[in-house]
Image (cartoon, rainbow, N blue to C red; front, side):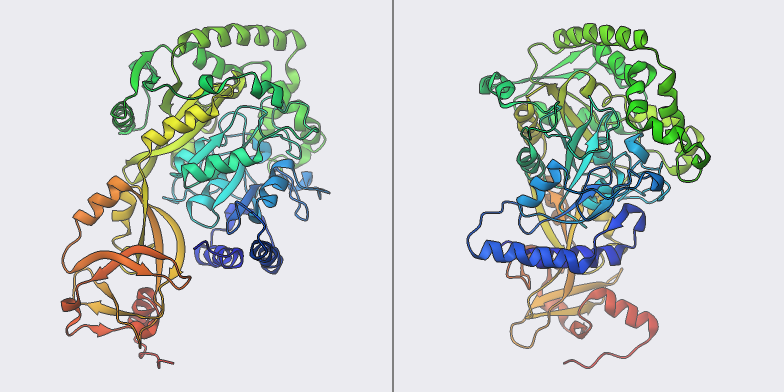
Length: 574
């Protein structure tokens, strides 16, 4: 049973209030307005209309137009009210998704850090002392924290992939121009891509494909003729695909433990029948350096430089100093420098094609490190540059790219990325599907809830929050005599209660390890939810409740714990 659009939107706003993470958003949509749209979605489904994204909540990066909400690109002085949705937004809405709000970003989509915004630095979904990555910072964190199911970002240098990796989710960057950029504030107009974030690979790629297709407005949108010119055999992986990986020396400088995690991902992929070949990716890395070190930065000035130049008095307040410096620096580039860089890029593209010849894709870590805010502040420019080592070249070389989670290192997510020639979007999806194990949802009702003492066990297995839920009204919750304290959930039928909990998603392997380590009397079994669906969840053996306190009246473990701490009396059951 699919959750109704109204229920999903209500859950989104409940999650927003619960988390208190205002830096994720620049503009939140009025809840009543979003609920009205959701109600219409539910009515349209009832009469048989096919809406493939109905029941999903969405967020949009605030450099992409949403009618009825302002566009700022994270610069209050740049704010304007768009008359219509961006093409990608219109298609997202047409598929039935309900947009909750506009998300924070590195100003003018210039940065991979998520800190360059007067609306505040966006904190990481897993560890608030760490950066979120950017520039699509709020969009990635809103998905990772389970506020929304999908979100839109943009990607010029890696903005739709780096924050995906640093927050443990999927980031899809289709071939440049497949999703029109109509209604997007440009960063580098000829390189910009609209991207999609989701916690699930299939949802992310399916959504991205729904947004693709020329709109007759964006002159850089790829045409149906271009797609038709590439055969299906060319863009799918063969029975025994070859995947390239960088030479060991080109992986130097990864965060501690990341090289080992990457080796594990490579091995896991090889176990699926993929042949791994090490290649010298220096031509790609050299192309990556052109994005900021060459004359291509002039395109950033062409996009928003006039605005910054005419508002220099706002630099340091409304306008971010680092972003302003980068954009204004583009004004000094000369035409001959740009054309020289174009020639060099053409040569590097040819060299890159030779390096990857015979391979279905290149596999790399998505990024190289995950700094704390203090570490980034010590070297903001260099730190940002490190983040883009493996992402900066994709749009310059007209390549498709897909970032996926690939494990956890020191309780932080680690991600890898498949990159392939233009229009090989299906190939990278197929390869990513081989690497990512099936995920299993798990209901937790006690010590594994967010912020509780055993939540770290879920995180260590690569789990991500999905949603807040309630069980059906036929369960009982008991306070077991364990250390640390745990609840016991049992289905008792008549006379039961609806118990609050959280659903988390784990990789199948992580789920197996987690379940294998469960101590008695805890068990895992099917739990019926109030919306009529069911999910695997924590239960306890009936013998364990003998002598245990029935705390069902509180409606959940956290409410009981708060009552104990406040020394309040048991509420009267109604």
